[in-house]
Image (cartoon, rainbow, N blue to C red; front, side, top):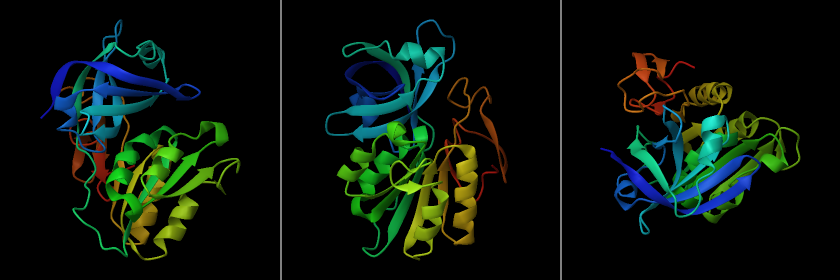
Length: 254
């Protein structure tokens, strides 16, 4: 079930170069939303809507938070919206992450994010709190986003940077392999570049730990009608917008 309407922006922040955070007041959408789902935004002057992952869901205040990066003229135009302006959106769309109802005190889940793939994982950290370990990868110190937000959830955070300016120097797959080797991980959730997701799925399969991955594809309708965002799975072709964006790591072909 999803809603379609125009909802007011109640907070806007530039959190890094070319990356913006918006909080949107939309009680009827927040009531339905789950971590891993997305919203489809209409931008004046552009025919196709833009999909943006849901970063946080505030059920108490009836709002959603989105964090997005300027990647073209459409997302650049989106940054012209300010507090008090309305965002025309269809939401919540797609299938989100599957969160356990409970978890043994001695077990953990791992969250693996790369760059702008980090925001969709924050909702899981808020739900799992100290049972979550977040391995967050960025190019450099100035590209880091949301690290403090993850720490506020009580999740353990392992930052990684390509240049070693903060945390582990190198890819997120190295600390991921180390954490999987501890044998207390029951689930891995990942979002980021396809090459990263492919490596994450491979490592999880080797460790016999289930994984869920959030895919990113260009979209048309956002509701499964146009099949623009098709991806390959071991069950055949699937639609990222309707059948995903979250897929079981064992079924998607990357």
